[in-house]
Image (tube, rainbow, N blue to C red):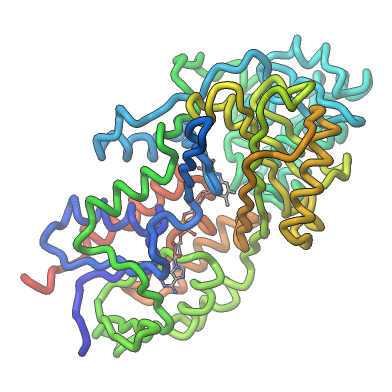
Length: 466
Ligand SMILES: Cc1cc2nc3c(=O)[nH]c(=O)nc-3n(C[C@H](O)[C@H](O)[C@H](O)COP(=O)(O)OP(=O)(O)OC[C@H]3O[C@@H](n4cnc5c(N)ncnc54)[C@H](O)[C@@H]3O)c2cc1C
């Protein structure tokens, strides 16, 4: 038997759940269904709560923070009444460190958007040679490129601040965000503020000076019980319309005006005039081209990097020289088996019992692809060896969790925004693609772009009940 709906949303990650929520708020008259392949909401958002004799550990296997300077995800949390669950990032006595020649060196304070706000700190940093410092500090004297054409992030930073600044500071800062080669990343799609400052103020340094002062609010928030609370709350509110263990294996267009039919692996059929694909790229690539042939070459252009994270907890007495800030980022040129380490127990309060250090080591992507080839036991050995070198950790960690993500990070290549626009234009009426691969890889951008699609569906669709 075929079920009929007004809107079918495929994928119950933050993209699909946000689109469903925002659509339902505006159009409660519509029949909407969210089909999620697995038995849980959230996709790449995944928290594990562990109870041990020592107390509770909150373990984030995927995303852990929500950036508040892009307000869309925090606003969604407030709209869902989750104010009391939000947890601001803890104040760290030291900034994040950068690994250089076998030891952690503090990042100059006042670095924002990969560019310096505090030139004095840059003057003193040992991360750059004298020539490297002089070149970065001369950014204001470099003639601006007034073109609107896209450029790689590597080319932009090298042109404005010099090659040494790129390799020593800007590239490793990307480790936690894009996990990709800066010479491949589009500056327009990743940090559009930078070329805008160059165009409007003739230099990034001048543009940074004109930024409004920080309001003092927390730049990142998490949740007391882990970030899984956000997709869980959305799924609870949407309970009647979210279905788990429903993997879509086929998408068909019935006739130009009759909408779409999806087939589940169980053989069940559902139809709707609107289908929103909120799946990872590999699934979107498999399902969409048969109904939108022109999308095939465009979907083929997008790239993703596989990545992984190993979460380890030691009693603090087993760590002789703890990292002092939120953690450590590791430049590509240092050729280490990890990209970054986050001290989760320092970043947010209540992540581990008092006297415990909970850390996450990231691997894969551009910096450490070979670590991904290792089996779990070898990843653990490698992480323990690196923790011994970097912070004098001794003995086996008491908690070990490993997560591997085949689509860890989308790589927004030069020309990304043009490819996304062409892809969207290649889709037949009533078919949409949303999620991290397209219009912003972090949760706030995914919430914003999914809301945009929900808004346009809400205004365009006539209810089947009308
Ligand atoms: C290690 C890591 C750390 C991160 N840290 C942060 C962070 O701190 N802050 C931040 O803002 N962002 C972070 N991100 C990015 C963030 O997690 C993603 O932007 C976001 O979760 C993507 O959501 P999505 O809905 O687009 O995709 P997904 O979460 O991948 O959801 C897609 C869903 O589709 C389902 N699906 C797949 N195929 C089918 C099918 N055929 N039928 C039905 N359902 C299907 C999947 O099961 C999945 O649930 C991180 C990502 C990773 C991997």
